[in-house]
Image (cartoon, rainbow, N blue to C red):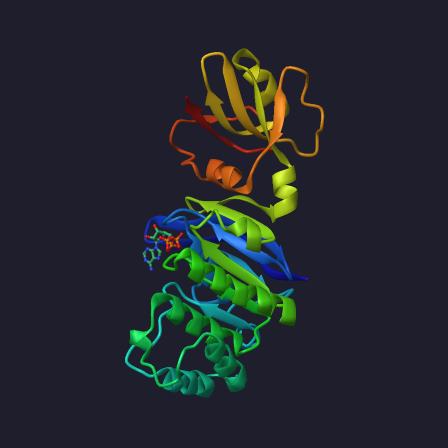
Length: 304
Ligand code: ATP
């Protein structure tokens, strides 16, 4: 079952498209990293998927066919918005009660246990908690609904490395214990490899690449070889990025399962971070058209 399926999804604000032509099928049971720079459209895509925003084109379905935003879908999704917005002047206890009253099913004991583990007192004012504690509170409230899908918009951005690790520890424990699916958007590329199993890279409102992280990394290699052979490689592979030196070129290519690169090129594996950064380079800056059909239509070219 696909936990989220969007087809030809687009959202326009005035004349500007926040996201465009997005088609994705995300299998259930994954921890999905939705990565992109500021303004890439991550929040818009998540809002469409959870039904907070009406798309301008296409549609979003969840849990194998439920309309995004329908009561059946909403009952099974917990969404934590960017900056974990909470009522700052209420006590932790009051926020728990409020959330319990707003939700048909809510596990008060679970949220209290989690907060106890984290040393967050019920009488503390929410506004006096640290950023990390506020994020943990928002997460505990979301998990207390026992969602099938947990959607987290930029949960890590304002947390220090220790708080990030603790936050993701709670998420991963919930995944292990309850088998829920998770989608989290992030700028923090470096730590995703440890937690995510599925990757979506969004840039300028369009999906650049999406898939299981192991398959995506296995399907890309770094090639180093003679600069005058670059065109040869471009005839056979989708080239994502070219770094040109005086005599040598370094190419990030998508091999689409082909193992034989030829004797002139030295091949090495690519890290997830390198791969994401290559797809995140502004496709319109120094981009040249790919001669390949059906492949990556933009090549990011960098002169070293
Ligand atoms: P960030 O990482 O900075 O939060 P993002 O990837 O989540 O960015 P979005 O917030 O989805 O990106 O924004 C995508 C584009 O859509 C931006 O250009 C933004 O200005 C625009 N946009 C988003 N929401 C609105 C809105 N309500 N009205 C007008 N424009 C909007």
